Amino acid sequence: MRTARIIIASLFIVLMVYPAFSQQAEKYTDEILNRDQMKEDFGILYNTIINYHPNPFQYTAREKFESFFNKQMSDLPDSLSSREFLLIARKLNLLLKCGHSNGIPSEEWYKSLKGKKVLLPFEITRAGDKILVKNITEDEKQIAVNDELISINNMPVDTLLSIMSEIQERDGFTQAYLDDIITRRFRTYYFFMFGVQNDIPVEYKNSGNELRKVAVNLSNQKLKPEPDKYWPAQLKIFEENKWSKFAMDTVSGIAYLKISSFSDRKEYKKYYKAVFSEIEKQGCRNLIIDLRDNGGGYFHHGNRFLTYLSPEKFDFNFLRPKQKPDKNEYISLGRVSKLTRFAFSLKPQKYRVEGKRTNTFSYKPKPLRFKNKVNVITNGITFSTAALVSAQLKQNGATFYGTETGGAENGTNAMLVYKLVLPNSGLQFNIPWYQVMSNSKNENIGYGVKPDVEIRPGADIGRDNVMMEVMERIGKESQTPLSGI
Image (cartoon, rainbow, N blue to C red; front, side, top):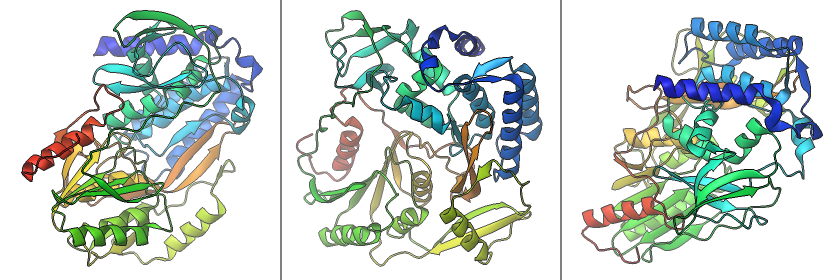
């Protein structure tokens, strides 16, 4: 393990020090920073983190945080591009182990890339221990969906992913989030590390298991539409919108509810009332809640959903230190967020936590509450509000399938987010204002909600094997054979 980490660190240093990988980056806005500029920005970032974040030392002790900062500050070279400096700054931010605290390049940098060919012509997915091509751009003619990737730019793909994990934020120690999010952001992170390239060597195995090597170029084309996955024939779709799909197998009494986001702020109340009315009408004995790839959203949405599944009243608590942070001219909060923060400050405190200002919203169970068996499917992208919902469902006795949630079971940092823009590099950092506490009594602090039955995605991209296996298991428990799987 120690040897592997040394190799990863060495590769990261190679990427940081040698500019040969980004010879064409000068065409874009990637300005060079001198040491004094970087020191100023790095100091502002550090002071803002420890002043504004609601719990900066939850997972990393203050002494370690300060020691890391001082060493990084003293090791800054004479000059770096803003893109290279971002990789260093992110590593300081990662000590928070907060999935809502992240750093990205400047707005000018993004604007300069508009319309340019800067991304790999394919995206990837994991299937067991293999990395497969999930989709390709409209202009890619050599590599195909489901090809197994071996190396890119003469570097093993799993090594590339390990390097990317070194600059990726996460909640606590959640490994599933790291695995899934760097897979999703692979194209962007590849560009962060290497800049603009041409004739990139890619080694892969095709559908006939033949080892091939081709040269690809970066692209600005759209990804091709993905084919629809197989759908169980017995599941009839009743309701569907941009963020959810509700279906039922009325013969076996199984209801399926896919929620891909809790961001909707208008329609969710009517939608859930209709969904749970139909579930009650059909007398469903099992409910499958699919929260995979749900990155979170509006807290009221998630909590109102829980009122149809919780046996008793519950509270939603969030808090932050009472002392005011040092004023900072480089950090800002949007107008709506300021009004929200003011409204929160007017709420009476229901709970007292020493040194903290607490806020509480209370929720009562709905008359249409589902009282039978609840089954939940999660993965590493089940994050933020979706992870808090998962923690509550786990506490209520639901059975979980899939993989660990990306959000920590004990809570997260969110609600309102400040934006920090560093004066010299223009790098942008999000820093949450509140610490949100879940109602989980699990003492496994810093990890996601663990599945009762772990099921990982299979090699066939066109088949949702996780959902199919869950359906099979529930069907067997119901002693009702399932068709069309």
